[in-house]
Amino acid sequence: KTCDEEMFKLLKGANCDSVAIGLESGNSFIRKKILNRNIADEDILATFKMAHDHGIKTHSFAMVGIPYETKQTIIDTAVFSAKLGEHNDPWRFIFHPYPKTELYKLCVEKGWIGATLNDYSDERSVSVLRLPTIAAHDINAYHKIFHIIVKVEQFLSLNASGPVKKIIRYLYRYPRYPIIILLFHYYQRLKILGLKKSISIMIARCWKAHNA
Image 1 (cartoon, one colour):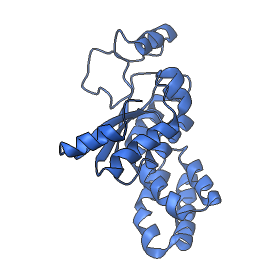
Image 2 (tube, one colour):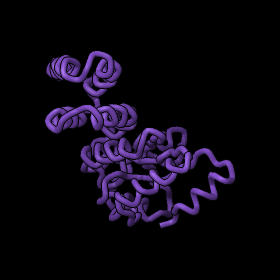
Image 3 (cartoon, rainbow, N blue to C red):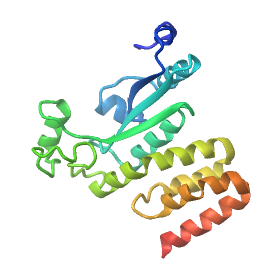
Image 4 (cartoon, rainbow, N blue to C red):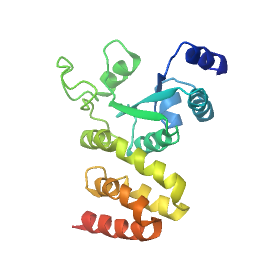
């Protein structure tokens, strides 16, 4: 642990108003076994809460498209990011295998690097990996809609029942279809019209768009 109450107290006393914290992944397997960041979910949540309790806003950094990533692990990261509080701004990037790092060596050994690394114009915004567990176009799609999933999750955590959450989280598995975009468009309507009526309208139109 590198963050404690005393540290945030000193930061606030120095007029610090925000800090950036590397979440990296909200999936414990990816975070601990692949990224070698042995930090428990509870400790991460406690750190963000400490910052907010001292009046310090946070920016969480997360990655998608990490080696061994799947659709579910990316969804886990977005869902976890939504738990970091209303005073957190979730940032997301696409994993990039930097030469001479352990994960770069792994990607080379597995033959997962599918593009040249000499051009850094799209660095961390387009996946250069060809993973067996998730397609590159899905990684890129999740990168684009990551913040939308976080916003929807924040609303659902306060207003939706278990079955409703289960249905909507199932829709997250289709990042390249307009389902998640429709969820975002109905986000404000959910708050204005009330949950029950809005959820029914939203789910009906989402399924219609998916089956079109």
